[in-house]
Amino acid sequence: MTQDLNPYRPPTANVELQASTAVDDRPLAGKGRRFATLLLDYIGFYASGAVVGVLLMFVLGLERATAFYTTGWSTLMGVFIVLAYYLFFEGLWGRTPAKMILGTKVVDVATGEQPAFGSIIKRSLARFVPFEGFTFFGSNGFHDKVSRTKVVRTR
Image (cartoon, rainbow, N blue to C red; front, side, top):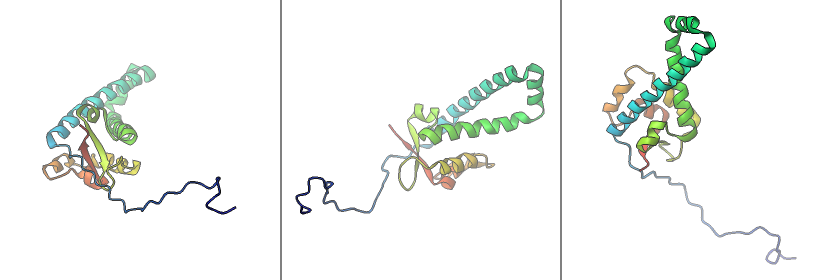
């Protein structure tokens, strides 16, 4: 049986592969929209902290929960809540609830796709650098530069 007449041969296509030129033409999210996203995310942090606080009160009891918050562990808990918030939402969907509401999304600079989880970790940890919030007076934030990400509008 010749190769041309073989009915069991997989189909072929004559396609020329071109170098991937993934250009993300979506517009960047403006500073005002990003600031509003930050404010809404702060509401999410506080709501998450309140839920964790109530759960701790039920698990530990009122006296031990009060001691937990007065010994400084609450600061560490706050850091954990912010990290968990960003890692969960941006790691799964590339957007926090505030980004979903305001129509923005985190994407990788090179590909325009959702960033790798390692980039999300870098992005989240960079938010704890002192004075990181002031880096938006430039063209992009420090946590975007470190993680090689950008925030684009989706609508």
